Image (cartoon, rainbow, N blue to C red; front, side, top):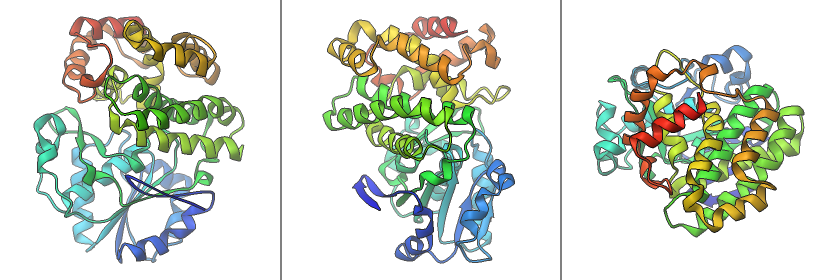
Length: 370
């Protein structure tokens, strides 16, 4: 068992889930609320967790694919009704982000909009909130060690609520939970992890330790992802993918860029309900080409690491693991462009892209990926 203390405590290995009762006891949590999604409940995966908890443990299993403010309010009401004193997030990034929203409301009043980073919310968030354990069942978002909750607000915006206080108390990472993940979800969530490492490294911000973590995570995910997609039961590939996911989120404290500015905005299109990792994958080659002229030695370094020009290598990886070839296939049209551009310019990731992007640049990037 490996214990890592970097931003938060991480318990990482096959079988780590078995330690949940011990960890709750260490956090003095007696009545946790488990936050998960309907898919994991239907598959029975949630039962592996619930069997390790008290029989009357409260369960919220209605996390939407893109978590909403309404769902946070509903889960928060259940938390209060059941007299809970802590939170367990069990699932992918959506469940973990929703759980972070619930956790925020254990010490803050709604509405959530006032805590969004773009609304000056960082200064309004304090640490007098309930303990939280995050248990990822995918290898992608790294939300289990991230300081952000990305939520769809009631006013239609998709925003990041960001603070060091939002980082879960403990990340309990058990790669065994990902062994049954279907190939397409493995690919889409894996490209999310890879894009975190990629954008962190080429981000305009200065943070060499984050760069080092990002490069190791990038090499790890680039190597392991095709194996995990083709051979889902490969334990080493699953271990490397979950570690790469953690590394991506540990590193992106540095800041991301245009890939995420666009995917956050695209993810706010309610009529399409687009998958975040899939969007990252489709946009990555185009954004790489856009950034190339300002990347200097970083482009050369990535070329060596990926064994080819980054934009071309990313496009080839997408094809090999079954990522859709365009935004158009997902239902995005030119009619969406203006709305998406406005959201991208307002996104918190916009400022740390290495090459400043204008409205026209964002529109062109979307056109290129349609």
